[in-house]
Amino acid sequence: MSLSIIIPHYNNTDLLEKLLVSIPQANKEIQIIVVDDKSDLFYLKKIKDLKTKFDFELYHNNKNKSAGMCRNIGFEKAKNIWVTFADGDDYFVKDFYDKAKIFFDIDLDVIFFAPTSQYLDTGKIADRHESFLAIIQNYLNHKNKKNEFMLRYNFISTWSKIMRKEFMIKHNIKFDEGPMGAEDVMLSTKIGHFMKKFHVTKDVIYCRIVRYGSVTRIFNENQFDIRLHARVSRIKFLNANLKKNEIELIMKPLIYNKASEFLILSLRRFGFKKFKEVYNLYQRENIKWFRIIYLNPIKLFKYLLNVVHNYIKNNSYNVK
Image 1 (spheres, rainbow, N blue to C red):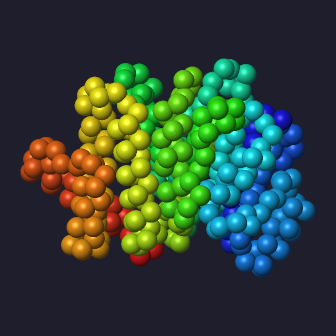
Image 2 (cartoon, rainbow, N blue to C red; image 1 turned 90 degrees about the vertical axis):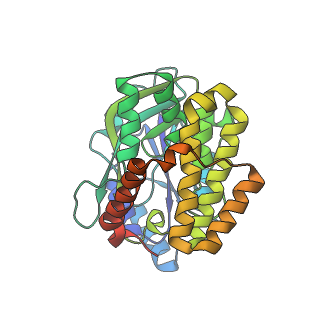
């Protein structure tokens, strides 16, 4: 076998079945691993029914409820040279394995593929993948240092990536095992930092589903805190591991923009008390967030316009 696909699952066997259908069951080079994250008994029974129709290994997270822990359990069970992670409500596109396997005999740490996304209710192309696709396209068009760093440090997702398992083990790269919401932030950051040999292709192998009720669409204060602290950890990692000139010349806009984004979001969504809490956190952790360019009225107008546009477009999918 060549590729292990690791899938966490929680209370959604219908979408899990759609994902399993998208993986060629007759292909013995693929190991499919499903790790259940303490689903209700009804869904555990349905998973057993799925095992009569599909060839996959089933494991259970019997520790703390955590999608990151499920993925780590699956990674430990992976038997193949290459691993990839899929969410239980997404799916692989047609002929994905044929597109991927052509790279399996090359000495690489990571393979990046162009992503896509789709709204579950309408079947139309969504926008969940657009920022990641832009990173891929920019790198393929101009392989300069800036675009390489955006690929390394701003492709914060396990979508559309295939990693060599040996590379992950060597650098002790694992998912965060805390509450769901940002368990892949530091993992993706470390993959980007430690990879030496990588390949980027415009081929698409994976489709991200956007649906109401998905963890990625939930944005209450608890989810805000989870994502905030993950990004603070990410900024601290970049500050500690990149050269000073790399930060100043390339990464400063990304680092400052991400910090300021969460500071503004704290005020807009949760009020002044939350804003003060985030501001104090930045002070304690020495997180820089302000740039003079933020005072540019044109930039400010574009930012506000984008906030309104995204709110109108995605509000029906977000859970408060």
